[in-house]
Image (cartoon, rainbow, N blue to C red; front, side):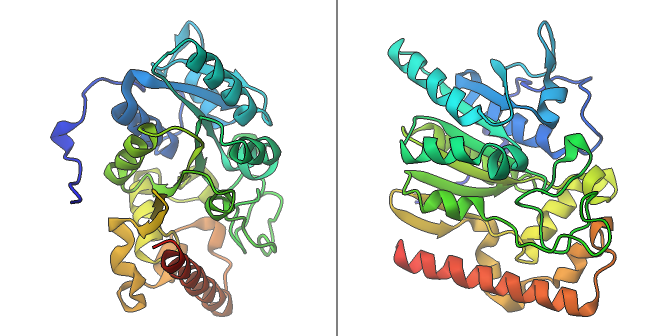
Length: 302
């Protein structure tokens, strides 16, 4: 029987320390705190260049109280695989986590990510997806949504479709794949705990709204993340033990009539303020198509 985690059951230790250089409202901090609360001292982070590299700082003045390895942009999954093999040989009880952004996962590091998945390496990959290359100037990435304005798509927005990393990893036939959101940290912690309890390649695609890059008020990070789920634009699901299920926060929204209008989500973001009514209608259509795909996969993996 499903028993949700209670807040009073979570540890009080701080794995992400105050005084760090993250932007106000940064979603990465929520994800990193969840890792600490779910996996504790078992967590070992392998992090390619990105926002988290800056947030963490450099030893001995660091803001993340977990073992942390800085690696080149394209090699996080490869380095994590080697580190995990070494720790397994030494019989260390560790969960090696390749924590990366969408650029390092969907674009520059996709080859090593796919290779690690095919080999079923004993690592947990978490993609904290803020939907652009935020650390280097808000350039479009493989997961930037259609029509989103970035510094490399400044007029009409991105014209290409976004890459669905979670479904790509599912097609690699790995043991565990899930989507998550910083707006639902308890759901994320439960998924981290399950992923940490098994061996092999595990993947979590974490939706991480960025106030700076998306151009919304820094106090609204959680509101934005929840709106993505409530409008159906980000579907929370989990593949585990051969079955694919909707996660509790997304279950009501399989019924289209219960979703909030996607315009409520888009209108709060500066990157979408140029959209026409026709654009919004097309985005709603694409959301419906994505739901159809997920619901069909649930039937196949039931």
